[in-house]
Length: 356
Image (cartoon, rainbow, N blue to C red; front, side, top):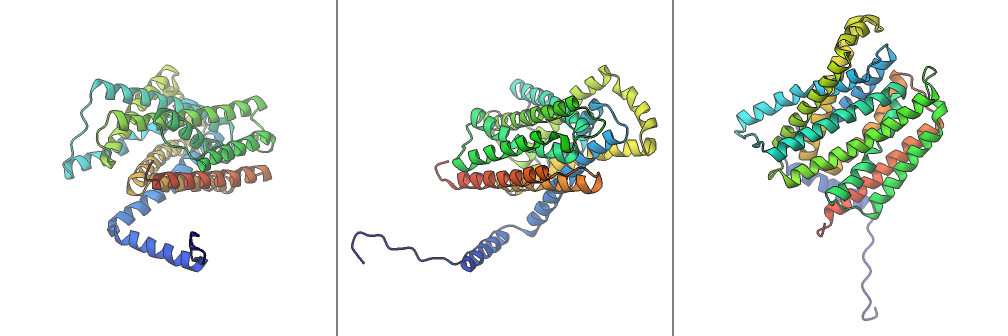
C-alpha cells in the first residue's frame, strides 16, 4: 500500500449491522428497570390509541347532530382534573414541592392557556367541515410550524434533513388541497371545506407556536425540567384554557344548547354525553402519554409515535366512519409519513452532534 493513503475501512454486512443493532437494543434494555419499559409501553399505547380516538369522537359529534364548535373545544380541556389527579400523588409520595408561582410564570401560563383555548377552537372548526382522516393529515403540518417557531424563538437547530422534511410535508398538504372535491361531504359547501382547511392549518401553526413557547418557559422560567414539572405546566395551562373556554361557552349560551343537542342527537342523550365524556378522557390520556414518552424516552421517540398515529387515525376513520380515501389522499399520507421519517432522522443527528 502506498504511503500517505488512508486504509480502507472493512465493509460491514447487513447481517452484522442487524446483529449490532440487536446488541445495542439489549444493552439499552438492561440499563433500565422492567417498570421503565412497562410505563413506556403504556404511554406509547396511550398516544397511539387515545389521540386517534379523540379525533374520531370529534367527528362523531358533528356527524350525529352536534353543531357547536365551542362544545368540542371545551371537551378538549374539560378533562384537566385527570392530569391533576396524577400530579397530586407524585407530590405526596415523592415528596416534591410545587414550583413557586411568580408574576412572570403565572402570566406565561395564562397566555399559553388562552392560546390553547384558541387552538382547540380552530381545530373544532376544522373537524366540523373536514373528514377525520383529512383533518389529521393537515394537522400533521404542526411539525413544520413547531420546527420553524422552535428555530426562531428557542434557537433550536435545523439541519438539511429536517428542512427537507418540512418541504415534503408542505408538499403533502398541497396535494390534499388540490384534491378537495374527492372527500368533501355532500352537506358541506365548497366555502366551508376551504375554511375548514384554513382553520386546520391555522390551528397547526398556533400549536407549533404553543410548543415553542412552552419550551421557552422551561428554558427561561423553570430551573428544573422533570416529569413532575411538565405535569405542573400541563395542569396550569389546561386549567386556564378551561377557564377561557368556559367563559366562551357562557357567552355563546352553549351550555344551554347542550340540552337541546342531546335531545336531537342520533342515539339519544346517553350517546351524546358518552361522546363528550370519552372525548375529554381520551384527549387527556393522549397528552399524558405524550408527556411520559418525552421523559421516559426522547423527543425522537415521541416524534416516531406522532408520525405513526397519523396513518392510524386515517385508517380508523376509513374503517369506522367510512371516510372517503382517494388515491391522492393515500399519496399524501405516504409523503407525510416519509416527511416525518426525514425529520426524525434529522433530529437524531442533531441530538448526537456533540457541538449541538
